[in-house]
Image 1 (spheres, helix red, strand yellow):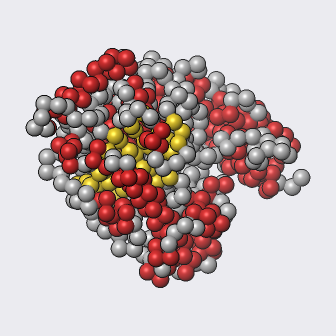
Image 2: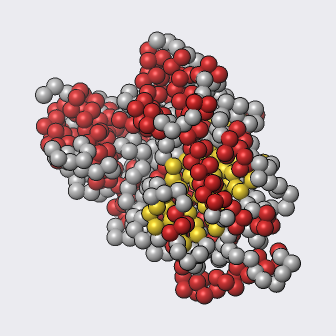
Image 3: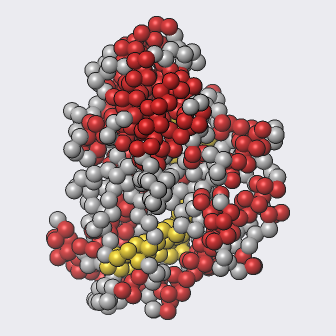
Amino acid sequence: MMNLVKVLFPLLIGCLFSTCRQSDQPMSPPNIIWINAEDIGPAFGAYGDPYAKTPNIDALAEKSLRYDKAYATAPICAPSRSCLITGVYATAMGTQHLRNEIPRTPIIGALPEYLREAGYFTSLYGKTDYNFTPEGIWDLRAQRLAPWRERGDGKPFFSMYTIGSTHEGPANFYEKYLSAVQDLPDSMFHDPANVKVPPYYPDNDSSRWMWARYYDLISGFDLDVGAIIDSLEADGLMENTIMFVFSDHGFGMPRYKRWLNETGIRVPLIVYVPDAYKHVFRSGDLPGLGTDELVSFVDYAPTALNLAGLPIPDHMQGQPFLGTDLPEKREYIFGARSRADDMYEISRASHDDRYIYVRHYIPQYPYIQSGKIFGDEKEAFRLLRRSRAEGDLPPLGEAMFNPKPIEELYDLQNDPFEQDNLAEHADYQEVKSRMRDAMHDWMLSHRDAGMLIEPEMMRRAGDDSPYTMAQDESRYHLDRIIAAAEGVGTVSLGTLLDNLSDSDSGVRWWSVIGLGAMDTLPKEAVKSLYDKLEDESPSVQVAAAEVLCSTGNCSPSALDALVRHMRSDKPWLALYAARSIQLIGEEACTIRDEILEVQQSYLSGPNGPRKYKDFNFSSFIGWTLEVPLEACPE
C-alpha cells in the first residue's frame, strides 16, 4: 500500500491542485508544519484574551483561520499525542494511559510514515511520548527550529514541534519558570494585578502570581512561533507552507490538565494557509476570522493527508476538516480520561456545539487523589490545600477534593466555567440522554479497549496489540462490559452480586467497582468478595482486595492477593496492586516489609540518573509505595 501511494503521489497532487490555477501545471504539494505547545488553553490575544501578550501568534491569526471549538481527545499529553499522530483514538489503540509502551499493530501507521512514503521529508523537534515506540517514524529528530534545511533535495516537508516551555513543570516550579523565561523581554511579562483568576482558585496574591507566570510562559511560546515564522520567511517558504499552531490539552493546572472537562480538553488551533492554497478551506471560512466547526485531535492526521493529496486509510477514525471532498461537519467530539501515572480513572465525555457531558465510571475516587502528581511539590496544589485549610477555597475548588458525581452536564453557552452541573436538572434530561447516547455509540463503534482496567486489557491482548484484541468481538464483549460499567452507582445490590458470577471477567471487575462505590458495603457482599480473591482474573482479585480492606473487612487472604500481584513481573499489574495497597491506608502496615522489598527493587541505584529505574512504571510503582512506607512505623 505504501509503495502504491508513493507511485500515485504526483498524480494525486495534480488532481488536488491543478484545477485551482490558470496554468495546466500542477501546484507543488504544500509543506505542513504543526507547532504544538504543551499544557495551555486558548490564551492568545487572537482568542480575545486581553491579558495575553502573544504578538506573533496574533499577527499570524490575522492571516489564518481560528478554530474556536478545537479539542484534544484526552486531558493529558501521551494519550493525546498517540491519537494526534495516528488518527486513531487512544482508547481504540489501548494507548489511553500515561504511560505504557503499547504494541502498535502494523495496520496502524503514523502520519510521518505515510508522508515519508509519499515523498515528504519529516522531522520532529521536541519529545515523542506516543505510548508506543517512536522508532523509525521520523526522518530527523531535530535540534533546531528550521529542520527543513537538512532535507537537502527540496522535498516537501512535514515538521512537528513540541514546545515544552509551557508545561506544568515551569508553571509549578519557580526555578524551571526562571529558566523558561530567561530570554523574555521585560515588556512581555504580565502584571499579577491584572490577572483574572479562574473561579476554582482563591483570588489572592498567590493565585495571581501563579497565573501571571503562566501567561509569561505562553509569551515565551509566542517567541518560538515567531522564530519559526522568521526562518520560513528567510527561506522563502511561507507561500507554500500550511501551518497549525495548537496545544496538546488545557493548562497544566488543577481543574485543567487531567480533568475531562471543557477546561481540560479545549485547545487553541490557528491554521495558516497561503493564498495559493485557500481553496482548502470550507466555503465561507475566511482568513482572519474564527469558525465554530467542531474539530478533534483524531482529525489532524486525516486532514494532513488530505492536504497532501493522499488517501486516508480506512482504519483512521477521524475526518479531514481542510482540503477537498470534505465530509459534513462534526456533530460531536469525544474525550477520555484513564490512568495518569499511578492514579486510575475511567471517564468518558461527549461534546456538541453547546454542551459537554461527562460520565465517571469510578466516581468513588475524588478528582484530586492522593499521590505524587497531585502532591504539594507543585505550587498549584500547595496553594489549593493551603487555601482549603484556611477556609479560603471557593466551592468549585473544594469540589476537586470530593468524590465525583456519576454524571456531569454543562451548558457552555451560559456557563463557560462549568459551575452548574445540570445532569440531574429536570429540564435537561433530553439533552443528557442525547449526549449520553452519542458517547455510548462512539465507545461501541471504535471499540473502546479502555473499558477494561489496564492489567486486564493487557492480559487479554497477550501477544497481540490491545487494538487487535478489542476489534475482535469474540474476545471482547464490549456491549456487556459497558452495561456493567454503567451500573456503577445506578443498579441494585442484587444485580451487582449476580454480575460477580458473570462469565466475563470485565463484567465481574465492574461489579466489584460497583460494590466499592456504595456508601457502605452490605454484609451480604463481603463473602462474595472473599470468593473473588481466587478469581481467574488478577484484576478482579486486586479490586476485591481493595474494596474489602478499604471497608474494614481486610483479611490475610486479601493482603496476600495484593502482595502477590505487587510482586508481579508484569508492571501494569504490579502498579495496580501497589496503588490498591496505598489506598487501603493503615491496613497495609502489616505488609510493610514486603512493600519495602518491592519498592527497593525499582530503585535505579547510587549512580542512576533518577531515583527509580525509569520514568514510567518503575517510578509510578515506587512513588505509590512510598506512601504506605512513610505512613507505617518501621
